[in-house]
Length: 634
Image (cartoon, rainbow, N blue to C red; front, side):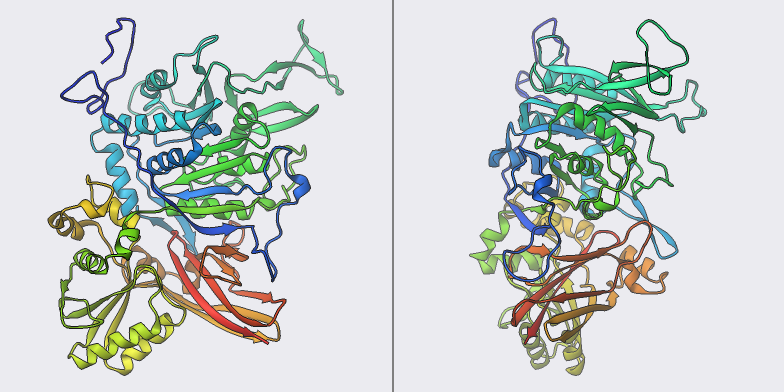
C-alpha cells in the first residue's frame, strides 16, 4: 500500500497480495482469439443481390472505407484484454459505459411474444457474471469495476475520454477508484474533468426511509492525459427578461449562449453548424419511439451530447456494457466508428436489430428530426474464441473423453460410432470442426440396431442442412428413439465452471464431474422447417414451422402462443454461403410496430449453378438456430 501520507486510496478485500501488502494483485489479461460469426451490410464480392451499402460520399473524411464496426458477445474483461493484446491499446477516443449500479438487479429482461408479456431468466453465463459481481457485496463489485477500468484506460488514446454513468449506490466509491486509476485532474493534469448530473425528474418518491427523493444519475468524466479532445459548443437558454449579456432571436425572445452546463435535463437547445438543434435528454419511457426491452435504456440525446463533445467524425467510440445499443446507434448516426460488447446474447440481438433498423429511427442533427434514412455502415459480430478447439482437433480421444464427462455419460469401447452411454441411451459425439451429417446419423442408427440400443443421443456443435428433418424419420423407421442435442459453446462451458483456469484443459476431472449437474445444459436442437421453391433464377424460402425443445422457459412460453413462428425474433439469409463467415444478405426482424417477422424471402441469382444457402434464425431470447440448404439454378 502507498506510504505517501497525502495519498488517499480505496481498499477492498483482494486488492493487495496477502503476503506482500505493497503489491497489488495482478489483473489477468488473457489473449483469446476472436471469431467472426456474421458480417452485416457488406456483400460478397460477386453475384446476387445484397443489402445496399452506406453511400461512400456520406463517409466522413477520416473514416476508412474498409473499416467494419464491431459488436462482440462475451465477458468485457476478456474482450478488452484480448483487444489490448491484439494491438488496440491507445486506439479508442471515447469510452462510455453504463455499468451495473450495485442494485442487486439480475440479467432478467421482459419482452412481448404475441399477446404474452414474458420474462427471460438469466443464462448460465449471465448467472456466473452475476455471482462474480455481487458474491461478496461491495468488495466484489469494486474488484469487478477496478479490473475493467484499468483495461479501459489502456485502450484509450492519449487524448481519449471516458464517461461512466452511475447512480447513488456506487458513485462515491467509483469516483475515488477512478481518481486512483486516471488521476485527480485539475489544470495541466490527467484524470478527473467534471461530474455531470443527468436529472430525470421521474420516480424517486419518498418512501419509508427519511430523505429527499433521488431524481438524478451521475456521469463521471475522466481523461487519460491533461489534453483531452473536447469540442465546446453553445447552448441557447431563454430568459423571461433581458439582462446584461442577453441577445434577441428572430422572435424577439431573450437568450444567452453558454458553454454546456453540468446538469442535463429535459430538452437542450444546442447551436450546431450555426443551426439551432433541440436535443431531448428525457428518460426513455414506455411510449417513446426509442423504447426497446431494456429497463436501463438511456436516451439518444444524452449520448449525442457526450459523443459530440469528446470525438470528431471518424473517431472510435466504445461501449463495453452496450445493452440496448444506444451508444453504438448514436456513434453510427454521427459518423463515428464504434466497438460494442455485452455478455447478454439478448442485448447483442437487440443491438443488431437496432442497427439494421437505424434508417427508420430519428435523425440526430436534422432540425425537424425526420428519419435518419441511411443504412448502418458494415459491421461484424464477433465471439471470443478459445484454445480448446485447436488443441482437441489434434487429440480426438481427449476430446471425446472430455465431452462424455461433460454430458455425464460413461465411455463405451468396441464401437465405431457409439462413443458412450447415459442411462439406457447410446451417445454419439459429433465432430469438432464440421457439422453432423445425415450419413453420420444413419451410421449411428444402424449401429444402435445391431447392438440392441433403442435409444440414442447425437450431440453436435453444428448440423448439416438435411439432418433436422430426416434424422428422426429415419430413427422412427428403425425403432430408435433419437434425440439431436446441441453442445453448448466452449465459452458457455468455461463460464459455468466457477473459479477455475480459463482453459478447460487444466481443470481436474473430478471438478468437471462435480460442477456439471449444477450448470451445464444440453438442449435439444430447435426444429426449423423451410419450404424451398425455385422458378428459373429465383428462389423462394418460407419458414413453415419452428419448434423449440420441450424444456425450459421457452417451452412454457411456446405453449401460450398461437403460432410457434412468433418465437422468431430475427432471421437472416446468406444466399451464397461459402462455409466461412455468415454474410447477412437479407433479413427480417420484429420491431415495436410489427412484432412478427416476414416468413417468406425471395432472391434472384445472376448466374446458373448450385448454391449453398445458410439460414440463421434467432429466437426471442437470442438463441441461434442455423440451417444450410442447397439449390440448383438452371
